[in-house]
Length: 152
Image 1 (spheres, rainbow, N blue to C red):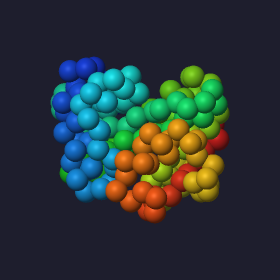
Image 2: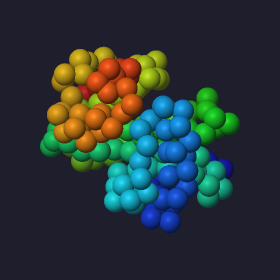
Image 3: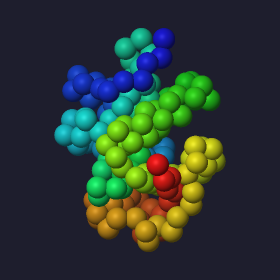
Image 4: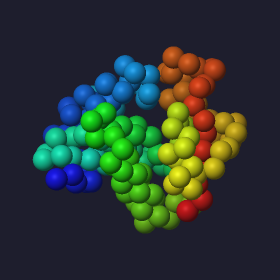
């Protein structure tokens, strides 16, 4: 049975494994185990019988702005709405925190459009995002992802 839940530190190794898998495919940026543990409270995971099969993360930037990031779902679990369940969890958590807008950088434009996200210019993203994350990307400064945002 698939569950969507907040992880514990004991899930960090499994989160790292799935992040590494998608980072090798250049779908997401790699993350160190230290970064994952440090930010474990930002994560939500999908589990199948206790095994992490998907992740997402909600990072806050300003009192009214957050980012949905590190969205992964192992290939054999894709097309089962798990990604949507993870993002829905993040959206609901952002609403509880009174966050007004969420953005994402993504290669999966149609997925985010189906959830109500709209395209924005990357120039509208927080500079902190650029200097903490984007600078580490192999595509920087020629980003191949689309910036999208949703008003909550």
